[in-house]
Image (cartoon, rainbow, N blue to C red; front, side):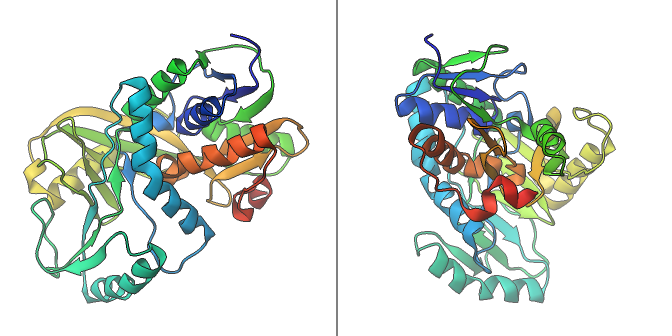
Length: 345
């Protein structure tokens, strides 16, 4: 290809979405990643695209909301270009409410959801269990219709196919040219911290389990006691995930994964005996601010950071990609103050 106008370092979901957006705007793009598309945390198995609680409201939640609302159209566009399914579906989420206080809090937030979500999506407490749901100690459940699911690894494969179809270059090594976007995950946050001499963030390991179980068509994801149980369209159910700040082997699974499975079966006995298709571990990039990190690399003209997705990376990747494309192609800065690199320093 000709000399690229944009070089993206990292082929996770932030990097690939950025490449796709830049290509659609007419730029020449090269993506460099030794591990290949989805080789890091973006190539996991869970794929829960779920909003934060609607109260209290803030700029980060508003940004996430916009991304979740647009997700269906954005992933459909990728599938149309690549011909590869992403596993996306807005199937909603169900959460059993453990006690009276949880019921009261969920009901109190219904008004905030109606106001802040624009009335287009439900947040409601119901007394009748949906068909795919764990038992509830109170008999009450929180339902939201905004949540969606995606198959992370297939989404990355679809993005890579779409980038290639639009003329982008995906390579394991190569030279940098033009604007350089650092979408390099948790190790990139460590590199940034070292370069700036101040901690900017790091990695949090997560383990997950993928089961062979065909949930009912369109079944909602389940959130119970901090555990995500996500039915995928391919006849699997993902269970995740752990949050480990200290670890020796980023890719190793251990008894923590076994515990996830035990908890999932206890909550959803229908999963008992389901074959384990895969145990997965990876390290998610967490910026010190806990918000996505977007913006110029301080002191390095022409270099932009797109990192820190942590637990919401798949959900906000399109919004981050738009911000980065605005910066590198149009010199237009729409980055929220709380997302700037300096916010994590």
